[in-house]
Length: 364
Image 1 (cartoon, one colour):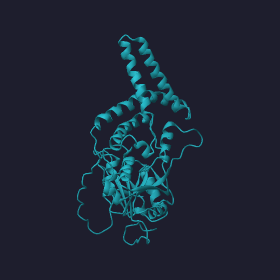
Image 2 (cartoon, helix red, strand yellow):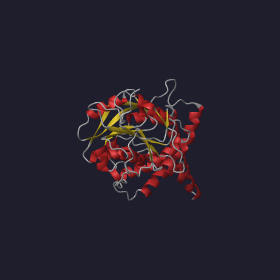
Image 3 (cartoon, one colour):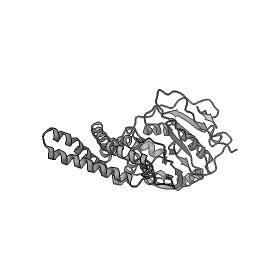
Image 4 (cartoon, one colour):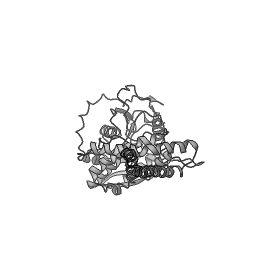
C-alpha cells in the first residue's frame, strides 16, 4: 500500500504540485465516495485534505467520515460554524499553506486520473493564472427523459468557474480576500470570486481533469427553495453591475416573467375588490397564461410521469411568487452593498507536537 502524501516516508516526485484539497461538507454520505475516489485517483496525492464541517452548530458530534487508509494522516477536519459554503471554503484554504488549493464539493466523484490530470493542469498554469477549472459531467438516466431537477443539475456541466472542481492559487485568494461570505448558499459565490480575480488582472483557464457530479436526491419542492438565489443575483448586480451575466456566462433565467406573472396574480383580486371586473379578469387571464406556459415549459422536456407532471404543476404556481419575494428581499438587504473586504484571519494555533496529523473520523 502506498504512503499518503505529506506523511513521513513519502517524498513527492520532483515537480509534483504543492496542493491541498478543500471539501466543505454538511455530513452527506456522498463525502465517503468523494474521498474514496480521491484516494484511488492516479497521480500525486494532495499534501493535505481539509474537510470543513459546516453542519449546524447544535450538532457537536464528530462527522461520520470514513477516511480511506491511503489518506490517513493527510485529512484534517476543521469547523465551518454553519456559516455557508463561502465561509467554509475560506476556513478550508486558510487552514492550509500549500501553493494551490483544489476545491471539491462533497457530492462529486473525481475521475480515475484526476490527480495526474490536476498536476498537468497546474504545471501548465502561467504565473498570472489564478485558477484552473475541472471538467464536470452530470450523469443522466439513459432509459427515460430527465426530470426538471435532473436538467437543472445537468447545467453544472456548462457552468463557468464552479467550485465543484476548481483549483485556485493561494496568492490569488489572498489578494482578493477569498470568497465573499455574504453569499450564504452554494450559488453565485464562485462567479463573484472569479469576476473579482479577473478584475484584479488574473486569468482563469479550464484544465483537462474530469469529475462526475451525480444528481442529488431531492423532494418535489426543491425548485421553490432554490428561488432564494434571486437575492444573491441582486448582490451580484450591486457588486459587478448589470453586465455581470455576460461576463460570467450565466443564463438570465425567468425572473422578469416571474415578476410579471406575480404582479398580475396580485392585481386580479385587488381590481375585483375595487369594482373593476374587466381589468381583474384580464390580470387573472395573464396570470393563468403565464403559469400555464411556465408549467408546460418544464413538463414537455421531462418524463411526463404522473408524479413529475403533478410536481411541475404545483411548483409552477409557487415559483414565481417565491422568486419575486426573494428578489425583493435581496433589494432590501443589499441596497448598500460594498465590495467584499475579508476580515483578517485569526492567528494560527500553536504548532502541535511532532507526529502524524489526526482526523476526527473513522478509517475505512
